[in-house]
Amino acid sequence: MSTSTTVLTGLTPEVADSEVETGLIAGLTAADSLSASRLDNLSLVHQARITQLTRTVNSLIAEYGADAKQVVTAQAAVTATQAIVARLLVVKQQTAETAPVVSSTGWAVWGHVYDSTSQPLSGYCVFLTDAQKNYQSAYGFQFTDSTGAFAINYAGPAAAPATGAAQSTGAAQETGAAPAPPTPPTVYLAITNAKAQLVSEGAKPLPLIIGSALYVDTTLAAGEPVLGDLPAEIKRVAQPDQAAK
Image 1 (cartoon, rainbow, N blue to C red):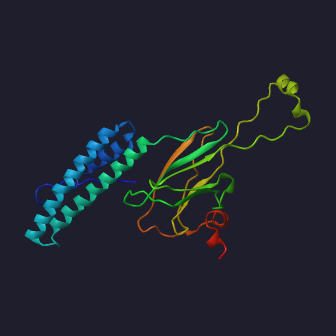
Image 2 (cartoon, rainbow, N blue to C red):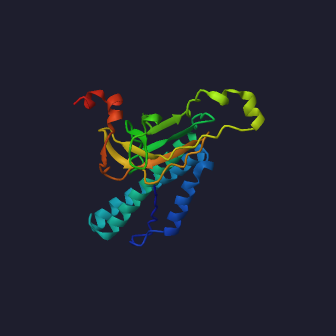
């Protein structure tokens, strides 16, 4: 996810300041330490800038026409600042969220799904796959809520019943053997839209840690290119009417 800012200087087209843009992106990336009030203040500042830049756009159109280079540059500044405001709202939401409680033998994946303009997407299905893109049904699936949030919380494997020599606790104590810690699976995040069309496939496995919750935000590409369909196993549970067709 990226944001940019453009500073309008007079009526000249050379208005982009890459250093300011880079600094802002770095600041938003490390925004966990920002308070909600500071985020609100930043949002108000940029909203005021949008109002000012919009007035400038209208003045330039009146003077030079809608296709003039100055107008295109000024409109780009408006668009960039709107993207910053949207990103600030996303960061504020992230800082207000609480991670799910995870069992000592399990793990969780939680986060949000956004469109290309940082707006939350509701009713999108989030699930996990293996390297061959096969749905991993053992971990279930989740639909995003009105804020684009989801959480897949896996409690861990059920304890297998002891058999044979393993039933003797005394033998285990004598050897000092400890049960092997569970190993997190190699899984990828996949997302389908409200039409059950696959619109996102993770390129890298999730860095899961036993006993921890991994936060993941996904911003979908503009236009949401379709990559496939919702797995049949999920359809049978979540969309039985469609699965029967």
